[in-house]
Length: 400
Figure (cartoon, rainbow, N blue to C red):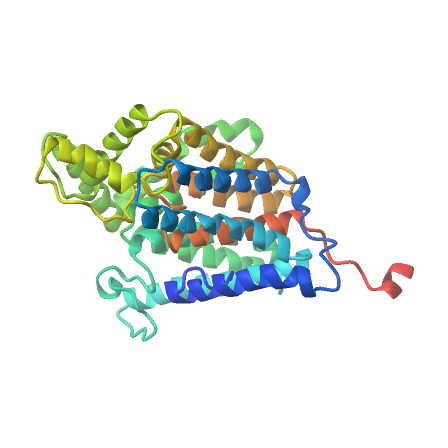
């Protein structure tokens, strides 16, 4: 499962099926249940995930969405179970390290392949529709940019775990290559924002405590440097400024920023209409079409599997204001569990969590496939890594 994220969606789907089989089989067949793994009963993440899924399931009782769309959305949010499954199945820190190594090799393949494409070298395994135009490998530039930025942070914070005399230096070199790929090769603006945020956070953690207030200005300084030095980032930020300036709520706009602003404005309106319980799971398309049809009877329905490109507002549309609070509680629960970890593990997990929080400002990252699976797998893996204990020594070693 750890190796699958970042690869084609078909492989991720197969890995999830196998993971589900393990979840059902291990309690029945395993002779020794995990002893050194993460204690789920002592985590805040387990009840937070369970409460979120329960709320979505209960909203089936009042959802305005067709039953098929509502059930489809519930299945998509079911990927949250991956977080718990990773923590439950990993029995000790050594197993978590094996899984982390598989994750790292898979992500390294993506980063290296993107650089090969940028160098105009053949990459026969690249299957993305934007392989030639945006140097992506298996996914779009939005998802790949985010994943590569997070991968860079994981490499940096856990560099001490890489074996070999030059292991840490290799990890740092991979982190630099991944971040450079995000800033200078890929076109995803969300990935670039995540990269700036994670780089600022890493610098802050390296500074003495009295200088850490500098984190307030670091993102702006880094953004300015990258704007000047990276043509790709300069082009994307200039396009963002143009799209926002040209946006008008009185007329339709098909730009990326314009669509998001229209969706966000409508989402706020829908939350205001149903603040206590929302319109139920999977209700976004139905409710958006209703609102737009009131303005324009000739409105063409949007994709029934669509979303408002903002996870916070999406939870609000489906579950009302309690949904917004529930999503915040889920993020804070994971953060609370990371506080129990040793520093390197905690910083890696907190970096992944911050990335998710940022991505959810611009996309429905948990709802979406691939990127949602990526975050659930990585957060579950890092929680398992940080909350697990080292393997017990052999009996002879203990006696000695």
